[in-house]
Image (cartoon, rainbow, N blue to C red; front, side, top):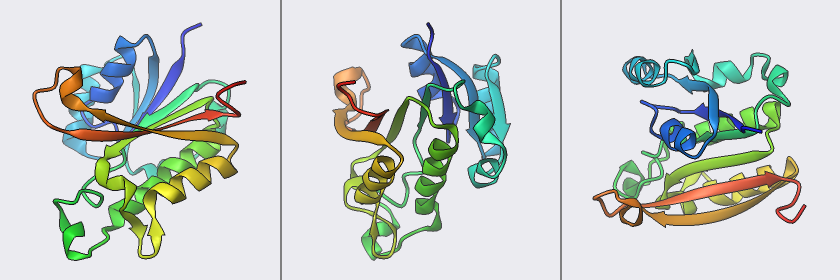
Length: 178
C-alpha cells in the first residue's frame, strides 16, 4: 500500500520531492505564492495543487479527505521563528499563526501521520505574544489524539552544502507502539 500525502506550504516542491523519493504519493499540495505555485505545478504535474491561503482552504470541506490522506506534511513560514529575523527585535509576525492553520488542516483531515518542518528557532519562538510555538503545537496534537516527537537534523548530514539545523515535529495518530 502506497501512502498518500498532502503537502502544505509546498513552495516549489522540495518536500514533495523528498516524500516521493521515499515512496509516498503526494496527491495534494497547497501554496499561496503564485510564482512558487507555478514552479510547483511544473515540478509536480501529477499533484493536484490548491493555490491560495491555507486559512481559506481549511474552511472548505477537507473532511472529505479523511481516509484518503495518510500524511499531512509541510513547513509553515519560518521567518518569524528564525533568530536572524525580526524576532531578534521582539516582533511576532502574523505568519507565525499559520502553524495554527496547519494544525486546523490536521484536525479536519485526521491523517495517520504528521510531519512539520521548521527552523531550530521554532523551539523557543512565539506564535503570538505569550504563546510559545513548540509547546502549543505539541499540546494541540496531543488533544487531537496524536503522539508528537521532535527530531533535529543537520542538513550537511544529508548532502546539503549548508550548516542548517532543522527541526521536525513528527506525530502518529494514537501511539508509536500501536
